[in-house]
Length: 382
Image 1 (cartoon, rainbow, N blue to C red):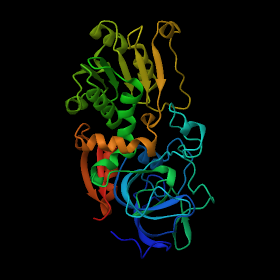
Image 2: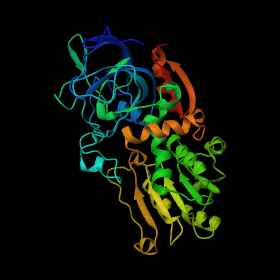
Image 3: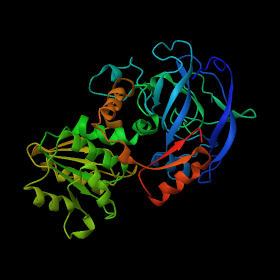
Image 4: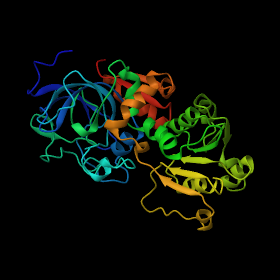
């Protein structure tokens, strides 16, 4: 695929534009400006719909910013690079990511953090960092970006620090789901909870992120993986991801942490919470075994929530941790996650339940709103 004719030029292409909150996206012809310093322009081949896109499209609980091009789970090819970009070139296969890695700040230089000072997710910013302007426009009207990626467009411009170069042999229609939710859940288990082989793990919430956390527990060799969810319909599907037992809190007249403690002789070795419910977070912490239990929080709570537990739960040597994007540094670590898939260690096909052409992108929103399936792949060339 040659891009010699488009480098440095404005590209006209199709994009799914959200003009108003909650209204169907409209396929429009947009103009995409060339990348500036430390930016790359990508040709998006496949994108996926994540619940975060839906949340901000609905504009519930946050400041609306429209018109906007959503999308942040995707796979594509570098079309052109701006000044100063040295580690990417046209033709490279990449995953754009909603958070970044500048490689210069204290967080990026720390082995213990992936929360880049410069490129950490900013949900309110709809423009590029360097000049405060959008690279998208329609007849001169700027169209806002979303979390620095805006992958519901055939071409998009992204900061180089938010682009992970991957194995060109990896199928982009599969590994595109690693740009957000699947890596978040997987890394929460493998990088933060770190269950030992033969250990017991409880997963709170069996949506895509929770099932990815279960997949991580399966890869780690956990002997028991207990899925906790209020929706009993999710239990059969979860078996594909290694979940061995199920608990529905509604089926019990005692706190679910007590149920799990009884099931496991005092508590699980590790737990991963993927719901955002403050009650689930407390249960996930209190269900781990004293002495060595570790609970990892992934879900994002309501801004007014408060985490309450008795201090003795901590003094009795339980550990509470949080994680952001599974503690993966996008540029440094995502290539190795792709290799887990290529080596058949990580099974991504299980997460992909639908596929639609770009012209029918609103169907993906319908699937998500109905709770139908996990991930819908959107083919940009169809």
